Image 1 (cartoon, rainbow, N blue to C red):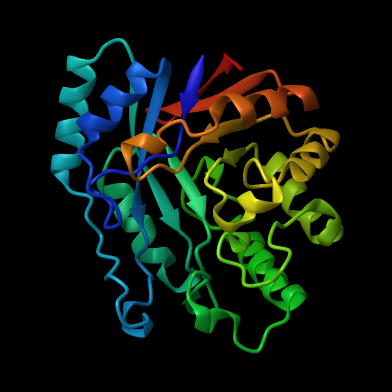
Image 2: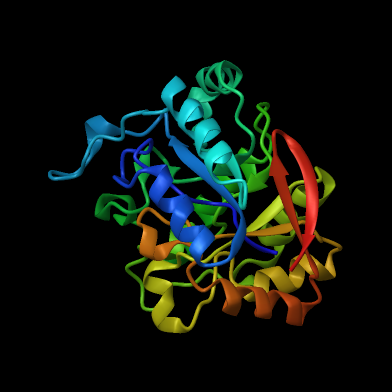
Length: 273
């Protein structure tokens, strides 16, 4: 089954498309499962944002779930999930837990966008860091997020730091930080969580990177015994829905993966890749 487990709609502040449009496009492209994972970045540092950057408001409301329920009723040919992408910030964990308890999220991605109080996409994040320092700081934040006490199902876009990286070599590969990555991957496996293959790679695309994390990291994950994976396009526009699905799926099958691990209504199930 073709699946896309990471998508955004107008219930995220950085997307304007209706979920109905995204679902229709996914169905046309032959996808059998589609998860909307709207942003919950409660600790986004809006007061420190560069001039011109939009405010990262929290937009998930009862209307999100009403529209998703109606959409599923109108489109029985595709399995839809009303999920959320949590942007981990340690000081906001209590509020994150409260928000997660407010609504019946069917699937929860745990992502890291903010390190030392700044979005990695902002130029000021990189001030004073060389590549090794900047990437290590990001990995420390990812490792910390794995111990978050709230419910989460998958690790989102591991290697996000490479998307906006100002350095000549952008992609985070396994050989860069094998000890730190082994720790992260081992914890993901031990906790029974899912490792997402995110096809939105930003500046890493010029290096031939297919997904985040890089295929070299998925290879090591498989060697360590990891089998729970899924695919997410991280689309915010409909033309990006399912982006590079076939290419990423083939690369993962070549490693040995043969199943997607999906979540709907909080319950895991698998489908053949």
